[in-house]
Length: 115
Length: 112
Image 1 (cartoon, rainbow over the protein chains, first blue to last red):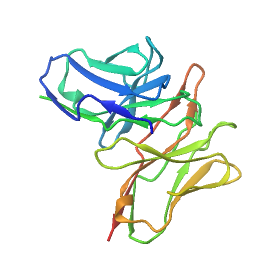
Image 2: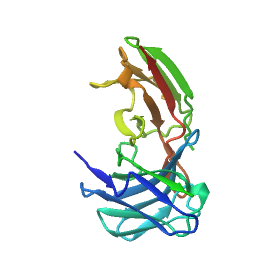
Image 3: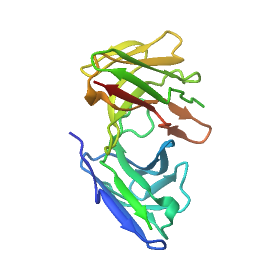
Image 4: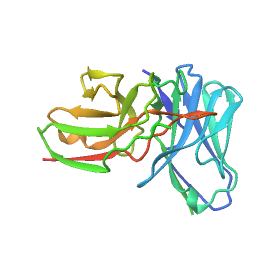
């Protein structure tokens, strides 16, 4: 089974702090994704990466950056956390990217609270 | 661009069959339709995928009419553990990029 792990299940940070969310997958997948999930808004794509050191913006990249130095690891960075970034963050990986037959495998999520 | 529309929420009782319909009027010719299930405090997980007619697995069935502009996820004899959010996915094909947009999903509540 594919396993996607996220560094923390719960995280509390203060406004202005730099926050790192880490995601690791063990299936040698090319593609990795970061989403945030808010009540009533579903999952919204922040960034995705289709290869090491490659990244593309999703629908809501503002206030976030990403890093993918190794194939198995994809980091989401909040340069200066703000209260409106309080959310559930979900990482996913997939083999083929945006082929419609592709399956995304999700981690358990990190619930971030910014005070 | 293909966009999906599905009901925001549905209620059911244990033992009933639940059908959740998703419309995707602009689905591309070669694209498949995929459904995910998300339990509280977990990430979504793949449950079923299809291209046309009917697909069945151990979890659900997926019915797709000939015009492929909609699809229906069918959960037979639901139990309390089927309480979850169900997402229908179809790729959005744009000029410069393709996206898989999850949308808001359908929140299914199963009662005893």
